[in-house]
View: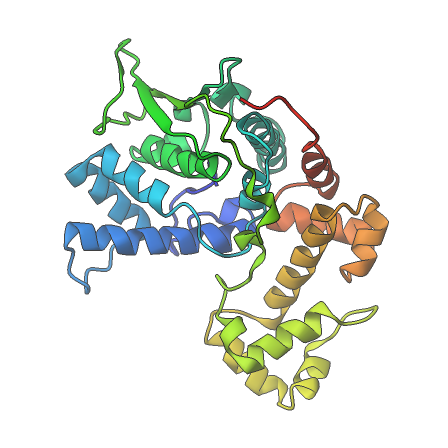
Length: 335
């Protein structure tokens, strides 16, 4: 979701690693998917091994910021486990979405840098219903020339999940020019205004099954009986931890075979168990479980401190904050 789609470049192109293991897994896959679509738009040869960030750079240079915005908005939702996306898509209204976004950004900045590295007013909700984005005020959106366009596109998609209202997009350049058109510049220094038209036809899709509680962005376990059974075993294990030997035995295979099959998807058994535990804890908190000791127990953590460490390392949102953010869905005035 907004803010967290890019990171510092590195030799492995694991561009989101500083944001946590779970966040990285989802948004790196999202970038790869988006880059594949961009390559088709640019008619790039299949053999050309550009990184996802380099492909988006080329899309911005050759087709402009509007092309990046359109791609991000049209493809803002990818089924897979992402807690930030779950938070934003279940907000009851745009005002709550903005509040959640600000609090998540603050929490992650505290964990990553020991303090706030991004100004809290990078996103604001105005009384008249406008949402104002200032991508230049927040990392990592301000690290790339296409960051403004991509951030706006993903934000526009998130707002579209909450309302049927038509969304106007305005760009306010630092030179003082304000424009609304189908071909905006999305200059890295610009502020963006997202303006849903005022209408009673607002909707909250919270009643629909969330696409952000699946693990299929890691590997296609749902259509593979072997892996589907493994996830079921991990999901329904009793007290304690199902080690790889026990899991392999229950699957009727050897540890070596299980490890080899997971390695084909660039996964280890330890990684899969961490994702399953984390997802189980998030589901419990999302369903209204407020006692962290109970969440930790039912999600197969050793204790709530173990769970808190995993949340810090994987999504950089403390469990108690996640509980409080889901609880803020009480009635608020709608636009």
